[in-house]
Image: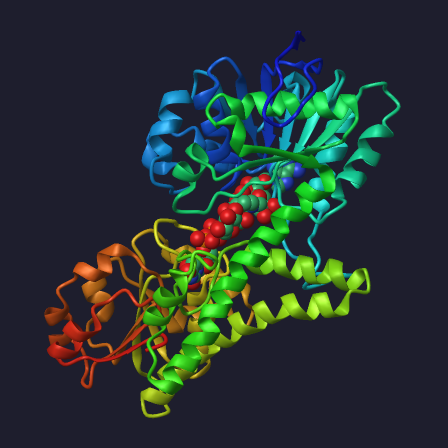
Length: 482
Ligand SMILES: NC(=O)C1=CN([C@@H]2O[C@H](COP(=O)(O)OP(=O)(O)OC[C@H]3O[C@@H](n4cnc5c(N)ncnc54)[C@H](O)[C@@H]3O)[C@@H](O)[C@H]2O)C=CC1
Ligand SMILES: O=C(O)[C@H]1O[C@H](OP(=O)(O)OP(=O)(O)OC[C@H]2O[C@@H](n3ccc(=O)[nH]c3=O)[C@H](O)[C@@H]2O)[C@H](O)[C@@H](O)[C@@H]1O
């Protein structure tokens, strides 16, 4: 492994820092983060060999599929980057041990879901997959490694990883870095190409700073130095949870105001515009909706709440927990409004869902509001017909079954999937928009109206449709916060 001396960066690394030039990277976890992130690192660093590994054989086979439309993740622009780098310096493999052995830098990008058992059940992050990675690295490594936490982790996790790695007794030296990922799904490729910032935390020792600098160089291939922030490990780990908590808090804040708007004839879009033009508040992330979904907002806030409670910081915990409470309320409120508007019964009625993904331009459905709204309406014996341009029928059933509210057979009876949106809405008593897919705006709404039961209701959970135009056709439209 070569050792080079580089000049200082804007991150105030001492000029004498001696750090490794990275030649081989391994990323454990070929999911929504590992796949796109490593594809971009490989694209921008053709001289670094990047191997993404996963235990899931099907996932790896899909990443290697010659047909790029079969990649396991749908992200606009991902196929082009994979096509450019795959086979050149980007590889997908199930041989975790070999990739670990070869690499001088190892990213851990495995899932960190909310615990479903034991202490912290329903709140704390389940770190078993991360720990397994650390143990595997400890077992396999025969040369010094920089281990990078890419997964979102509770503050202080690096201490546990360090303890596992430092107790192997085989003399291999490890440096642990925290490099949380801030990409959002649906825009992952542009977020990765032009990140607001890259955050790297590490030990503030000479060895720690050298490891930080090695990773700064990897990102430095395309990210301006001023946007690469370096901190200590704990600030970096905590910043990731805090960033998600602040973002989710904005959505819950505007959603709380949407209910107030509905009660007062104010319009939440006008309010969002009015407050967003205050440069201290800013215009982004103020879109009222049926509630936030996605794999991370809820999980990361629950984790923050759990950490705060564990430290005896009950007021801090309660403050952040309210963001989740508000989000659950927004979803329930949307479903309950459908029931009450449809004359207090949806039993046997056909409700068409436009959208199932948790946001547009992704096939990810984790924690999507659609799942919870469907579950609530099925409790009332509604027949749900879903159209989503990117989500499979199998995935929708799996999402509903995951809630364990009723048997799989019963769920299948109440939830149907349609691959043609016009079929999904045919004969429906109501349409509910659950995802803001652009194509919904350009449908032939007159044709849809003509084929629905009357009165024809539309519940726009994303405020994407032209309410006035729909009302002119004859629809009875309810939007969020209007
Ligand atoms: N999805 C997102 O947009 C973002 C996620 N994150 C964080 O990144 C982490 C990963 O998230 P996703 O990529 O969405 O998860 P994911 O579930 O899509 O991917 C994780 C992958 O890790 C694999 N895996 C688990 N244990 C393994 C092991 N021991 N060896 C090899 N492979 C293993 C799984 O098979 C799975 O394919 C989480 O901590 C998440 O909070 C951070 C920013 C954005
Ligand atoms: O850690 C993570 O997983 C990621 O979580 C979010 O990204 P993501 O969940 O992919 O998507 P967002 O754009 O943040 O949307 C989250 C949810 O909030 C909803 N939302 C967002 C913005 C808004 O104004 N209103 C609103 O309802 C979206 O529809 C979606 O359901 C963060 O934006 C990323 O920075 C972070 O890396």
